[in-house]
Amino acid sequence: MKSSSPNHDQQSFLYQGLKEILNPKEPLYQLSEKIPWVELEKAFTKYYIDFGRPAKPIRLMVSLMLLKQMYNLGDETVIAHWVQNPYWQYFSGEKTFQWKFPVEPSDMVHFRKRIGEEGINKILEISITIHGKAAMEREVVVDTTVQEKNITFPTDIKLHKRIIEQCRKITEAEGIGQRQSYTRTVKKLIMAQRFRNHPKNKKKALQAERKLKTIAGRMVREVERELTSEQKEKYAPSIEIYNRILSQKKNDKEKIYSIHEPKVYCISKGKEHKKYEFGSKASLVITKNSGIIVGAYSLEKNEYDGHTLPKALDQCEQLRGSRPTVAIADRGYKGSSRIGETEIHIPKPPKKAISEYEKKKARLRFRRRAAIEPVIGHLKTDNRLSRNFLKGVIGDQINVMLAAAAFNLRKWMRKAETFFGSFYKSIEQRIFRFWELVLSTPNLKMTF
Image 1 (cartoon, rainbow, N blue to C red):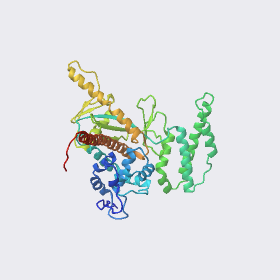
Image 2: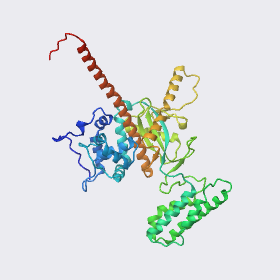
Image 3: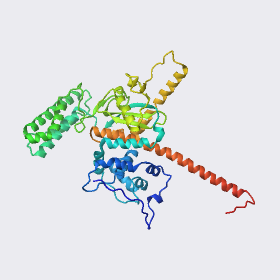
Image 4: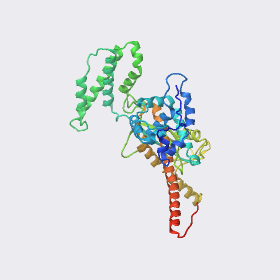
């Protein structure tokens, strides 16, 4: 059931509220007045039913998600910081300072599931619209990056050991007797993998690896034999993943790299320091001059960059209401020079027939294309795009869009800080000069 919004009209006779004691020049204070919270509440009302226990206020949940992403915190840590920070509480719609935790960390998980990809898309749209005309540029820059999943570096040994552990848990949960648990054997086989690249240990490590795979297959078959038909239906998805891992080979496509995240795929971007990354590819669209993110989505498969352009441009049109006329990309987007009404510009040797002015214009345009690289860097270091802790494919979509929305809001805050800081500073300087003139002028009569 949807909760009612708190009433902020009545003032307290005993003490002042947050609005009176906080600094109105603070960027987060300004941002809380800029975001259309009423519009968000109307958009999210459809996700609630008309009966049952009232849920937490929509503004509180949305603000906690944004603060988490803006300041690179987790579900638990953002709540702990919220109790200590009055500006965060005012941003969340509180009237007076609160001493208790506003929600449980699990409430944020439930709220993300409640609004889903559609609701996060609405938050991203609002983060774009608050920038006004700056977000409506006709030229945009497009690029892709990798958001890694929160999994360990995958190896066959780790996966086979994990299968054995999960088979033990299934047998214990269902009360099935095992012929052998292999607890001490598996421990010895794992220890045999230490220094496996040393010439003296290579043969022993390979034998232990084969033995570990044999034990994993033996336990999976034993579980399949002992389970009843109802139990098999319950554990069918897990057993299917186990069998796929045991049967996959080195050069297979669509391999499974994690049992709890089977949709993760391996991506090689040609980086010197990181040859392979395991997660999902994300497409980003930013405006050419202002650098506002006007499009962000996660790819379910490792597609060629050029094939991601149509969806990226469609999302950009949906979020801001107008389609870009020019999209600037790198050489990884080769293949098409136009998609619908949008021209695709990719660096290439200039033709002899074009003028020097056109050459210079193209050169400056592609230099500006490189501005998306530091934006990606800030998304990863500041807005939780470097490692995604949210589960599944829907978690990939939510994480990348929330990171983009947080980046846009932080960008607006920096702009507001510069504007209001210079505005108030100029007023103070004028007042100081006025009184300096008054005090330095003799025999000046002032009438009030």
